Image (tube, rainbow, N blue to C red; front, side):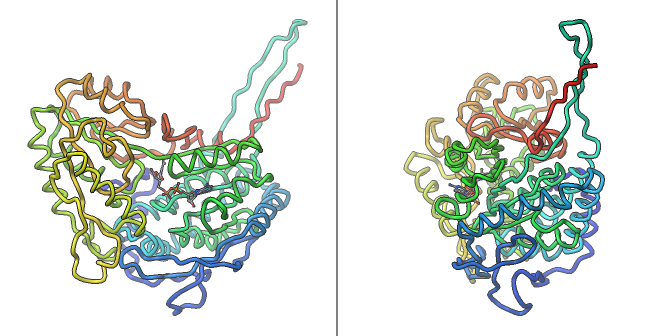
Amino acid sequence: MHCGATWSNDRADKLARRLPRLQPPCYDCRGPPGDLVKLIQNYVDGRFVPGKREFADVNPADGTVIAQVTEADDAQVDEAVHAARRALRGEWGRLGVRERAARLHRVADAIEKRFECFVQAEVGDTGKPVSLASKLDVPRAAANFRVFADLVKMAGLESFQTETPDGTNALNYAVRKPLGVVGVITPWNLPLLLLTWKVAPALACGNAVVVKPSEETPATTTLLAEAMQDAGIPNGVYNVVHGFGPGSAGEFLTKHPDVDAVTFTGESTTGAAIMKSVAPTVKPVSFELGGKNAAVVFADCNFEEAVNGLAEAVFLNTGQVCLCTERIYVERKIFSAFVEALKQKAESLHSGWPNDAKTDLGPLISAQHREKVLSYYRLAREEGATVVTGGGVPKLGDNRDNGFYVQPTIYTGLPESARCVKEEIFGPVCHITPFDSEEEAIAMANDTKYGLAASIWTGNLKRGHRVAHQMNVGITWVNCWFLRDLRTPFGGAGISGIGREGGMHSLNFYSELNNVCIRL
Ligand code: NAD
C-alpha cells in the first residue's frame, strides 16, 4: 500500500514498527486518564475550554459513544477568531521565515512523539484499520509540516525590471505576506491528514487558523493542539472550534467578518453553501470537493498490476477517499476476466475490528452515511444492475454488527446515465463498464460534472500520455494510484474544487502578494 507521502515513508515505517499497539488515547484534552467517556473540548487562545452544549463522538466499529464533544457557539467562534487576530499581532507575526519553519518541524516531531496516541485517536473516531492510520494518516500529518516548512524557506517570487514612459526604469518585486486569519473546515474521511495539509502551509506563510473539524472526527484535530503547545507555537495561532455546519460552528466561522480566507474540504454541495456564506465578505476560498473518479483499463495493461491497483483504488478506507475509483472502464477483450479477478479481490477482504492488524476494511463513518451507501446499493438494483458481489450488510457475529459495516460491492450492466454511475456514493463500491475504443473510453470517463482524479492502465506509454492529457481532472495516474509528491498541484476540475493545493500552490493561496514597484 502506498503511504501517500514521499518524504517520510521510511521514518514513519520505522516508528510504526517500534511503537506498541493498542495503547489507550493518552491526551490531556480528553480529561483524566481512565475516564471511559471523555470530553473533547474547544481549544481557544492556548486553552481547552468547555461550552454550553455537547454532542456524542461515536466509534463506527460498534456504535459505542467514546467521547462527548463540546459544541462551540457563535461567541466561542468569535473568541477564537479574535485570539487568532491577536496572535498575528504578537510574537507569531514577528517571527522570520526560518524560525517559523523550525517550529513547524517541531510540530512534526511532536506528532511523531505522540504517534500511537494519534493513531488510536484516529482509529477510534473513524474505525479505519490501524495499519492504514499508522502507514498513511499519521505519517502524512508529520510529513505535511516538514514539507511546507522546507518549501517556505526556499520560496522565491518573481521580479521584473520595467521601462517607464520617460525612458527610465522601475524595479518590480513581490513580497509575501500572510492572509491573516484562515478558517479551516475539514471532513471525516482522512481527518488529520487533510487538516494538516491545510494548517501546515497556512502556518508556514505566517497565518493564524481557526479550525472546525468534522463533527464525526473531533479527536486528532484536538490532539494536534497539544503538539502545537509542545512545539512552541504561540497561543492563538491554532484554535479549534467543534460543531456542525449550518447554524453551528461551521457556518459561524465562514460568515465571520474577521476571517480573511476559508479553506474547505468536503462535499461539493457544502462547498456551494460555503460560497454563499463567504460572498458578502468576499473571502478567498480554496475548495477540495467530491469526485466520481474513473479508471480506464486497456487490454495491453499488466493485468495483475491493474487488478491489484484498482482493488486498492476502490476499497481503501472502505471507499471513503475522495480519490477512490467508483467507475471502471475495461476494454471488452479482458472485461470478463477483469470483473472476475476484482470480484475475487473484493471477496478476500477482511472486515475486521479496526485494531486487528489483519483488517482490510473498516466500517463506514456513521449510521447516516451507511444508510446513504445502502440506499445506492438498493438504487443500483432498481436501475437494473447486475450484482457481481456484495450489495448488503455483512453478518459479523459480534458487536461489529452494531457498527456501520457494509459489504464491498461491484456492479455491472448499468447504462452510463444511471444515477449510481453519475453520483458520488463514497463507499466500497464500483461499477464496471466494457469499452471498444480509446475514444469511447475517454468520452465515458469524462462524462461527469466532477473532475478530481482518473487512472489509466496500459502497457503503451504513448497511449498513457495521450489519454492522460485528455482527462478533465486535476490528477491522472498512469499504472498507479494515490502516489503523491506533496510538491505537486492537487485539486479538482468541475464541481470537484476551486484552486490547487500542494507545494507552491498552497503557499500562494495562503499568502497575500504585495508587488512593490520602485522607480530607479
Ligand atoms: P461535508 O461537506 O458533509 O462536511 C465537511 C465539513 O464541512 C464538516 O466539518 C462539516 O461540519 C462542515 N460543514 C457542513 N456544512 C457546512 C456549512 N454549511 N458551512 C460550514 N461548514 C459546513 O463532507 P464530509 O461528508 O465530511 O466528507 C465527505 C466528502 O468530502 C465527499 O464528498 C468527499 O469526496 C469529499 N472529500 C474531498 C477531498 C478532496 O481533496 N477533494 C478530500 C476528502 C473528502
